[in-house]
Image (cartoon, rainbow, N blue to C red):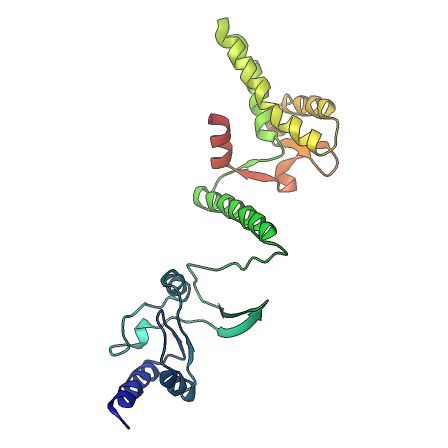
Length: 241
């Protein structure tokens, strides 16, 4: 056995001694090393992007090391399963069952590049919404309930202002009603009747402030009960801008 083979054996022995059964490497892996790893039952993935390595480390709880000489069990991450699957024409390695993942991957597929890009944009928007809800911990009733409630309250407030400011307040109150109006119209319902119904509900007081447009039937309904909500952050930004 030449010196190079001895070095390869030491590297594989260090990986095995640490307790690893999967090796993920940013660079290439010599075929001889791959052979020795396979003999020890260690699955190897080579030429992985640095960004993917960092995500994998966050997902599994492992550490990225520059060499295997001082590798220990504390450097290892964990997952219940690592397997290679065929996806279309590509071979992909799936790491699943991480106990406390701080990073995950979502595989998006589509018939064309355009469809895939549209799905990616929609998914990105959805994740941003969920993220804002998790971070803020506050949501508002959807279905135009927030806008119509603000509109009703502003109309009541406007006469107390007087002068041109009163006209500005009333104009802003009317502008807010565009949201429930558009929801009803886009849902194929009578937007005028819907708006009248919503106004009547919200003028009833505090108990009715969650009433918005139910797009299932075009009627006014309690959005909390229907679980139709929107993030406070998104709502605040839309109104203030």
